[in-house]
Every structure is written in structure tokens, then in C-alpha cells.
Length: 425
Length: 179
Image (cartoon, rainbow over all chains, first blue to last red; front, side, top):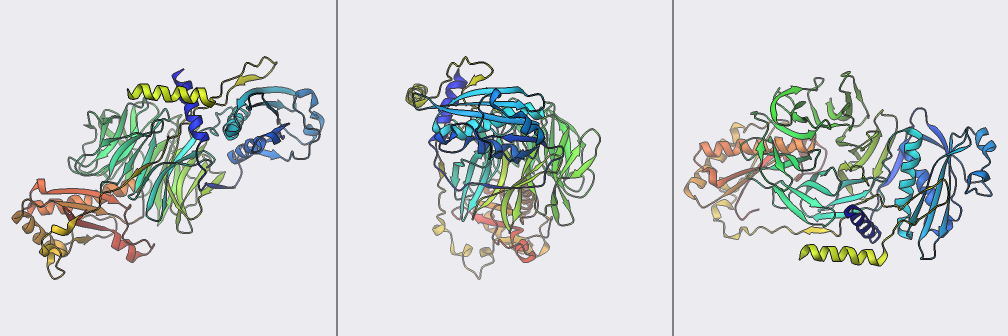
């Protein structure tokens, strides 16, 4: 119940958000074995301020896992299964079809009903009715796309998740949060000093980050529910690289208070800092592995920056990357199978993936300036920072490297992306 | 009290325009409200930094003919050792700090823009720590010094050229009141 109240409150706040410069998305490449799908216009959707079927279609398209079939010429539009002309869709090799309807309710809200149909079998494989306000069209469309995606691919959809990133415009820095498609950006923090390294708490209600407002790096935790923020690490020297433990109770941070950059665990409220690395070298960029046992981090203890793994309680570290002289920014997929990181090759900084079982590595991009990678919570896409025309921009690539998206904001430098978690409700 | 206010606010909003799932009994569709909890901050937190007030500093620190007015050390790519050419500069500042125990210094290490932002924080820290260590050996007190890193976040020069990168691989020494 608490969660339900919070959800509603948050949605209301979201609905009241003002529009700002939005990330625009450009997609290149396509996945293998794309599923052919038609998304029909929902009967009666003209009553909504924007087309709900367009947003569902754009979501599915962006994932790279579907081949969208043109469905703009269907008349009359079906809203129920018996009205569907399966023969035509079969002849167009459609595997699935999305149909729906919008009805205005007496209280001014709307009901959106959609059905997902298996075309070869001529059966319904999913259907949900939502009650929504005119401000909830995007949210509802993302929910529908998530359901379609999961039914057809077997993987959970991430269209309802959110991303955080930092925008630099002139001398102003803003920590922003937007929908996974870049829509509805909102500013959580504005400052004239840099902001970096945002990290989502596992429940998606808080962001940890580093802010330079005190002329040095200090780690904060910022509640997205209350807007309140708290200093978590402000020791003598530098405080940076926050990472959340799986239970959201602790952070790993990098402190220089005892000399050199070393990794510490600290309560999410700033309590009880304890050191877990003990090297005379640089140890930084901690990341909690999803197994709940280990931490991946970057260290130059072997003479060049490489990725290591150690127990969350500290102790011996095992080197994980061996190729090249600069491998940094480790992140592990939710299933624990894939390590992604940034590798310097000549003068290029590229996003790479390493299968942790087979030790097979793969470059995912042909980038020059890739940095700050972060997995979508379903592990199927990776969001990262890159440069376009000498300006910071965001990009995403599928975990097999086939589908690429570029996200940009006009006239601003965008960096430090972090993909937020699933919401369980 | 704060809690009560928060609860009251939530209830007021709920009464205002909250969406609740409608009972729907028609076959073959589940009924849901579209409430994937999408958290959204209630407003923008704006940070207003305090401006430096460095006017009461002694002239020696500002006089361009005095070595103490020089505050920057530069580095080679991926390097953090203090070059020999900067030892007289550090000696002068260490002597000043030893003679003026009330003065404090913030040493900020900086990097060029290449590579990981967080790794560059650590690299800049190593640069600043190196300066601090030398100042301590030369007579400054631990309590007078703080070494921090700005990584690649505050570039003095923003072009992607070698000259610019060299300008940004730098440690700066700032006295209390100057930052």
C-alpha cells in the first residue's frame, strides 16, 4: 500500500513536470531474427492528446528486436479478436499483432484496452485494460510495450524504466532524469560546479552522485521522492565513485582520506566507513556484482589500469582483464555473465564486453571516446557516453553490438548516463 | 510533524486526482492501472556555491614578481611525479606555510579529458598527493594541507589539442580564501 501511494504521488508529480530540451534518438543497425509485428492504431485514440499506438510502436522499434510492419492503412480498425483479418496479416508474414481501443470514462479519464495476438495461431496471447488520465499516455504506452516485448521475446521490457545523466550547458550543470526513450526530462539538481557518477539505488528511489559544489568531490545521496539530499562522504581529500550494494543499504565509495584512492564500504546514510582495499596503487570504480559476493573495480596495481574482482569483505583481488594497457569502468550484467568496460586501443576509448565464463572478448562499438557504460536492467542494451561533433552525447548499443542508438540534446553537452532499475509493483 | 505533513500531502494529492484501477470484468483482458512507479523528484535542488573572498591575503602571494604567486605544476600524460623544475616553487610555498602556520592550502589535481572520469579523479588525486607529500617533507604541516582531485571536470582549456591537454594536466595550490 505504501508503495501504491508513493507510485500515485510520483505519477502526479510527473504529470506536473514542465517540458524541457529533450533527448532525441536516432537508431542505426538492426538485430538478428527480428520478430515481424504490426501495431494498429487503437480505435478511438484520437481522444488522447497523443497517439498511444505510435509510442508503443516506437518503443518496440527502438529495441531492435522487432520488424515493424506498416499498419497505417487498415480500415475498419479492429478492437476485438473476431474483427481481425488474420488472412491478410498471415500473408504479410506477421508473427504478432497489437490492437486496442480507447474509451473516455464518465470521470474524464480514459480506459485503454489492448490485445496482443498470435497471427499464425489466430489467438490472443495477452491483453490488459488500463485506466489513465490524459497525462499518463506515455506511461501507459510504455507499459503496453513492456508487456508485448516480454510476451514475444521472453525478456523483461525496459520501456518503463528511467535514465539519469548530466547535462552541461555553458557553466551550468544539471543532473537530469528522463524516461528510457529520453522523453520527459526533469532536473533533480542544478549547480555551477560539476556533477558526476550518478548511480541508482536498487529500488530506483535514490541517486548517489559526486558533486563539486565544495571545490572538491563529495558524495551525496539524493531522494527522488522527497528531493532531499544528504552528504554521504565528505572526508578530507577526495570522495567519489559511489556504487550501491544489492540491498541498497551500503555504498562502495573511493576515499583518499588515508592516502591514495582506496575503496571503502559506507552506510547509505554515511555511517561506519570501512576500508576494503589496501594497496599503494589507485583502486577505484567499484561495482557490486549481482551475485552479492564480489566487487569489480579498476586498479593500476599491476602497472596499468586493469579490472579486478575481490570479495565484498575485501582480501585478495583477482585480475580480470589482460589485453591492452588501459581497461576501466567495469559493469556486470544482471545475470552475472557479461562484464562490460572501456578499453583504450591506440588513442581510442571503446566499449567492450567480456563473457566471464568463456573469457571471450568483443568490441561493441567502433567509438573513439566511449565512457561510463551502464546496462539496461534486462541486460539487453548498454547506455554509454560518447562524443559527436566534439560534444558529449549519449548512445546505446545492444549487448550483441548489432543495434545502435544515439541520443542527443541540442546545444548541450550530455554525459555520465546511468540506466535505472526495474520497478517492482 | 514532518511525517504528518508528508502523509497529509499524499492524501491531498490522492483526493485530488489519483488514478485508481477500475473493476473490469470483461473476458480476456487483465485490468491494471498504469502505475509503474516512476519516481520523479518534486523539484529542482539548486546549489549556489560560496564565492572566494581572497582579499586579505598578503601581497607576497599575489605579486607577479614573487615566486609565491606561481601556483601551478604541470605533468606528462599519465604521469603524477613532480618534475625537478618545480622543486624551488614547492620549497618557497613550504617555507611560507612553515612561517605562517595559520595559513591553509588546498591542492587540486587535474587531468586532461582522455579516459575514464573516475579514473581521472584518482589520477588527479595522485598528482595532488605528490605535491602535498613534498610540501610536508619541506616543512609544511599536515593540518595546513588538503590534497583533492578535480579529475577532468574543470578543464582550464577545452580544445582537443596536445597543448590544451598539457595545460589541463596540472596541480594548483590555493590558499584559504582563494577557493
